[in-house]
Length: 183
Image 1 (cartoon, rainbow, N blue to C red):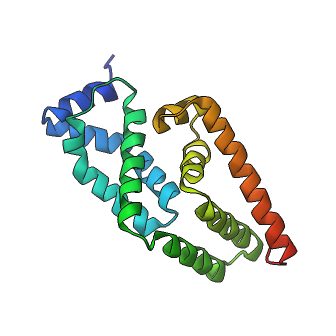
Image 2: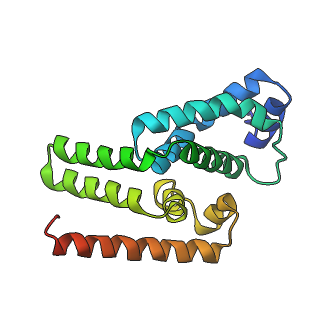
């Protein structure tokens, strides 16, 4: 029976320059990394760019991996920090997300479902960044509140509060759109 090497052991080895360990980590976690990037950027091309940038920076970042948390928790932090940095550099990100939502609405084949998906995509893009990040981890990555709290460096109670705020914000946006006859 062959035992699989843990992520933490691979990360430690990759941090010391082991290329095979690095390749194994990327192979295991690229889809997760990309999904998180997509949930944060809400646009496939931006998510691809961000994921590729992270993969390029990851060998250097792994030198600082201390195995104080699970590798996936550490990786989510790297993704969040990279997304925040990209957001600070790119002030047109919000406008790009809005354009993506409009294009999805225009291109939809199943009008009802596409319209709802487009509305949700646009609404998530309109949330404050801390709420959007929390929602991306809880809803998009299906993390528990405790795991999301570890990634974000906040308490589980704060995660619960943020998710409550997300629900309130989305409900308020839906009411406003219904009143404006947009949905």
